[in-house]
Image (cartoon, rainbow, N blue to C red; front, side, top):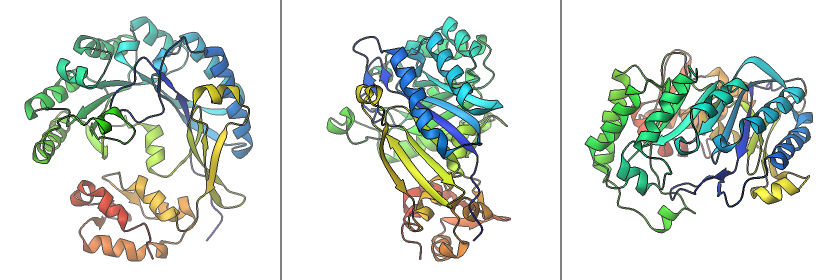
Amino acid sequence: MPPLIPPPLGLYIHYPWCVRKCPYCDFNSHAVKDEPAERAYIQALLADLEQELPTIWGRKIHSLFIGGGTPSLLSPRALDDLLCGLRARLNIAPQAEITLEANPGASDMARFQEFRAVGVNRLSIGIQSFDVDALQKLGRIHDRKQAISAAEHAHAAGFDNFNLDLMFGLPKQTLIQALSDVDMAIALEPTHISYYQLTLEPNTLFYRQPPILPNDDTIADIQERGIQRLAEAGYQRYEISAYSRPDKHCNHNLNYWTFGDYLGIGPGAHGKITDGASSTIHRRWKHKHPERYINTRDFIAGKQELTTQDLPLEFMMNALRLPAGFQTRLFSERTGLPWENIQNAVDAAQAAELLEFGQDTLKPTDRGLQFLNNLLDYFIDPH
């Protein structure tokens, strides 16, 4: 195989604080007790980045994503300091997508305007539901009115590209309630909707004290009807839980799903970097606890070189989330492995009607998307 050519590169920045920890959340987030030390945090992020710079010399950043936690708690001045520091250290593409996650309970019109003024050009707003009872059960700090206002404020602040996060399969949720959420989201005219099922993740309150969820048949009906409503409204399903207007895909996430590279800075952030000189791919992750992260100068908690045994599953875990699949040449381009390494697994998954070939593409069938974990099992040991 020829040497690996590094793929497009994104930057993920983690903000670890939120107003209150939601009972379903398994992200590295911590409820704010005192005012976060913004200056110390920004300095730590930039020091973290400087340690990473030798791994990406000369490469361009095509997207930035500031996630959390609740990054909209950042003051606009702190965010400006961060973005200025990034631009001074990185080759950021002029038209780079710069996304900030926002909580309707921790945002307002003026804040959105200031975020846009300092360079944010895409918002991702964590609505989850418009139903008052559902929001209370989910532990959200906003209500229906604030959820609607957040989307309206995004439009008014000049954002022509923003996402609304929407969950289904909520405690005791009915089909009518779920479709009402979808209809309300569509009415607010975002360019992108993330529509995904509530799952009970380990190390969460919901996992320890499970709420009463809809049965499997109801959840399947909710998902099917919700997808149908989104399609009728012009939202294309381009990833298993992502729907967008034409040409309004999330470029940052699409880079993940096509096995691109990304730096990760901030507490608990993960990165994946391709080294063209050695034709190796490494993962690195940072210390999780915010206080330790801010007070250290050795940010890396661990690192791993992906082996030829790791790479098929690592690639497919991302690429098979795309209903349209991927061009077959991308597998070798992004992993450095010949197609023959996965031919047996592909044949077996095809025989099980979980995969199908298009013109120079491989994609999951509808059944493959529905049973994605079963499909991925074929690539754990593909030989």
